[in-house]
Amino acid sequence: MELKFKKPDYSDCTAGIPNSIAEFYGIEKKGRISPLTSSILKDTDADNIVVFILDAMGKNVLDGNLEEDGFLRSHVRGYISSVFLSSTVPSTVSLMTGLLPKDHLWLGWDTYFPEIDENVSVFTNTVKDTSEPAAKFNVARTFTPYEDLIGRLNKSGMEAYYSMPFGPPFPQDLDCICERIRDLTKKPGRKYIYAYWSEPDGTFHEKGCFGPDAKKIMKDLEDKMEEFSGELKNTLLLITADHGHIDITGTCIRRYPEIMKCLVRLPSLEARAMSFYVKEGMEDVFEKEFKKEFGDTFVLLKTEEAIRQGFYGEGEVSERFKEKLGQYLSYATTELTLFTKEEDVSIYKGYHGGLTEDEMTVPLIAVECRG
Image 1 (cartoon, rainbow, N blue to C red):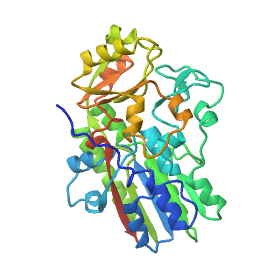
Image 2: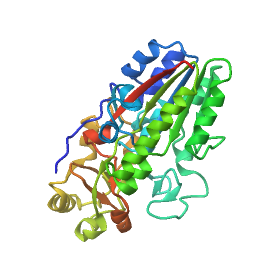
Image 3: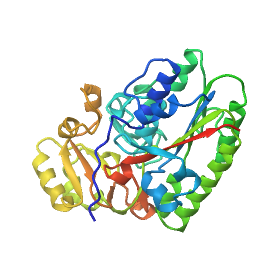
Image 4: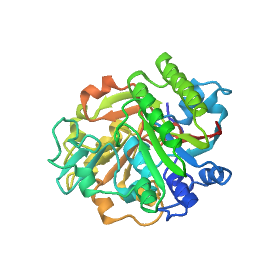
């Protein structure tokens, strides 16, 4: 079944949230604000601003798993767009910096680094589809460093903190993340806190988006957020997601030898939005074979055309950005998802990264916690 296409709306997207926060606190923005976020901030006098990311909690899974009058849906203030790719790596870095992926260059779970001529799984610092370290140093942080909003606020004299499993002091479960936030908000003075939790994304990947397991994790998260909000004082709690999530069926590109013969290396980025590196002189063969196999399930564009169409945002892109992409971009138009590792076909029941409405649309939930 063909799914509804949604081009990223960079006039109000996840990258705009930190820019709205920066504007609220009077420091330099790194890009466009989120008008919806700014309208909420304009009306608050809370000392504490908490942005809490629940990974993959898009509009479709919120509406499909929870009651309309429940805590989360009843506090939705509107909907904004994910960045492209609609995936954890590019969107969370955008949420932490205010930069679009074309500027911070953390482009997908697997990103090509010409400096070492490898596709690197950036969060694990491993060579794509292996457990092999990509280098003796952190490749992404070395070659694509960024300054986040937390650091910029602290430099300006504000108090700003993380509460997430991969940031000091590394709280490793949802209870510990919430406990850290509670403790921080009790301190006097104005503060900004960015929090992240990996659910419901993990459950959706393994079990799908709308079965009993999905409904349970969503209800558990809703109950936790309602309880947590009641424990906060003088705090504006903004709950959102980095991207959405959909149920999928999978196949593996290694099953198509005529396509594989055309490639310099495995595709990078994500299973629902792939960047292809094609051997010189094989472009016509590649296009023909890819469209023969996937012409009714994927759109295949030359990368320059995807840039021209604004998938990565307005304005010029750097040569460095172009170096990190192949000659072609494909994006899924149906549930079919194209993995590079055979075992992933049976592992994943849900996925994201593409340009469908359900993958691209996330809620912005606002709760004034007076205590």
